[in-house]
Amino acid sequence: MNCQTEMEKASCDAAEDIPPIAPESDLLKMKELADSVRSRLGVKQLPTDPEALDIFSQESLLRFARARRSIAASTDMILKSLEWRREYDFFGTMDSWVEDKSEEAEYLRNNWPCGCHGVDRRGVPVYYARYGQCDMALAAKTAGVDRFIQYNLWLSYQGWKGIRQVAIAQGKHPVTMICVADMKGLDWKTGLRAVPYFKRLSAALDNNFPEKLEIAFVVNAPRIFSSLYKLASHFLAEDTKHKVRIFGHNEDHLHAKSGMLEVLDWEQIPSWLGGGPSPCSFPETQDIPRQ
Image 1 (cartoon, rainbow, N blue to C red):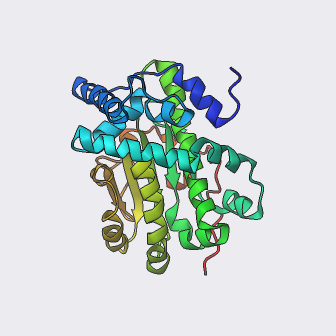
Image 2 (tube, rainbow, N blue to C red):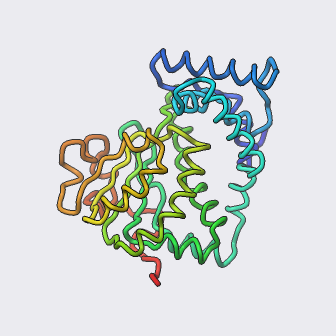
Image 3 (tube, rainbow, N blue to C red):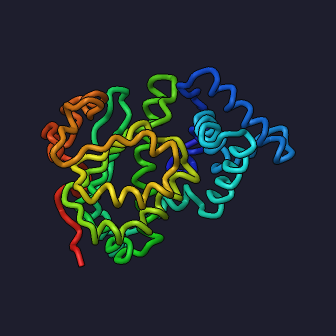
C-alpha cells in the first residue's frame, strides 16, 4: 500500500503494531482494557477503520489504561475519544492542515513559536513552546480558534510520528516525549487572556491523547507564573502536573538538579535556552504582535 495521506499511514502503521516499553503490570492493564472494549462493543475483534486502528494500537491502549484509575473508566475514556476522532476526522483534519494555504494558516506558520527541535537521549523528538514570546489569545482570534487548535494538534502530531519512527527503529515503542515551555517575557495580562484557549487545547490533548508526556520543563518562569499556573492546573491532567519541573528566570534550567541536561544533550537544546547552534524549524524569535 502506498501510504501518502495520514489516514493511509495510520492503516500502514497498524500492520506493524510495535509493543510499548512498560512494566508487566501496565501491559496486563493494557490487555484488560482491550478485552473490556471488545465486551462493551459486543464484538470479538476491535474495529478496523483508521481512527480505531490507531487508538487501539498497543501503545495507545497502554496510555488510556494508565490515564484512569479503573479499567471501566479507561474504557469510557477510550470509547469517547474514538467517537471524537471519528467526528473530528482526525487524520483527514491533519491532512487538510498541510493543504491549507489560507492567510490565517500562513499567519500561524510564520508567527507561532512552537514545534519540535532535536531529540532526547532515547532519540525521541522534543517539543518546545515559547509561550512567553507570544500572545495565545491574539493568535487564536486572528487565525480562528478551530484553526488554532488544528495547528497545535498538527504540531503535536509531528512529534508523535517521530516517536513512531523511533519505535520502528528500536522494535519497542517509547510512548512518551519531553516538552519544554519557555516563559521568558510572559506578562500577567497576556497570560491571563491565554487561559481559556490553553484550557481548550489541553482538553483536546488530555482527553484524546493521554499519558504522552515524559517530562514537562517550564523554564525562565517569572514571578507571576505561579499565579497563572494555579489557574491552569485546575484543568490539567494529574499525570501532567506530576511531571512538571519548574525553573524560575534566575535558576539554571540546564545544570540544576532535575535540569534539562539530565535527559538532553547540550547540542540538542536550542541556542535561546543555552544549547547548541542548530536552528529551529519554527519561528523562534519572531514575536506575535500584542494588542
